[in-house]
Image 1 (cartoon, one colour):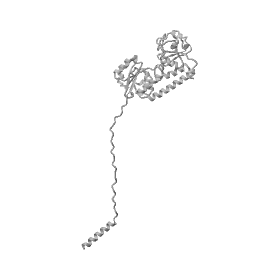
Image 2 (cartoon, helix red, strand yellow; image 1 turned 45 degrees about the vertical axis):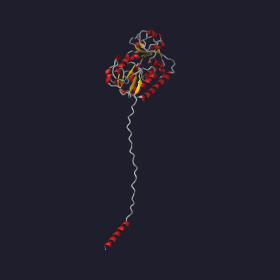
Image 3 (cartoon, helix red, strand yellow; image 1 turned 135 degrees about the horizontal axis):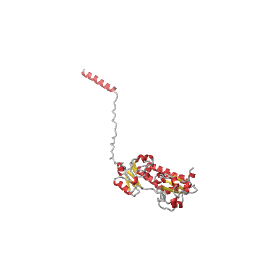
Image 4 (cartoon, rainbow, N blue to C red; image 1 turned 135 degrees about the vertical axis):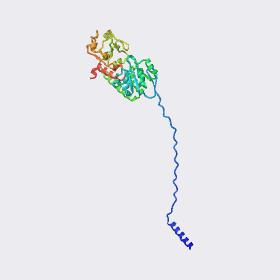
Length: 328
């Protein structure tokens, strides 16, 4: 009986196995090993080379980066800084810097009688002091001795040299594109003037008065000055040059004026109160062609005495005064 039951149970198990679905073993997927990235050793950021310049005194000047805090010691420098877009970087100016209007709001570091407030300049902590030819080498050295970086900008003798000064200040302050655009505009304006002047039938003689503190022997501008250059470009002839005077800023006597009578008199000293009527009241001047012909004009001396971008403004004004018939 036991053997019979065992047979029945075994038969039942075998029947269940025959009815169950076959199970096929699936091999585990092969996973490729992931490469562990090798981290490169950190490299130091490249250090920018310092900006190096040679100034108007032949001194080597270095800046680690374009100057962001500039003190200007001359009106021409201040005008250049603002014209090239570095006005916001200008943190101090000499007392005579009055253009543009925004410059007047800057701290005044002196300059009266050639004396500057070195303590005020140092307190501003500039990374550049921009000097000019109105500053002495002794003043530049004094600022150097205080540990300040000073660039001495030499006065230009030509418009091309003035453009070069704009480029230099732009490099010092990081405004090369703005300076390039400004120079292109100035050059185009000069070309426009010279093209008009080429049609002039004659060139009037011009006496430019710089200072008439002594009305009997006023100062004028001679060869080598921007005033002389601009008078020529504007279609005039400098009376001082015609008289054979070679000094840059000579005092001119009545005899010299009468011997080479000017057709036009321009009063650069109008800002100090000199008027056309006062010129006509000078003994011996009342018979000059400029006086009898009503060709004595007040003139903004800043436009021709400050070697910056407004020299082109001065040229345009001179041309219109000397040749009004060409600018109608």
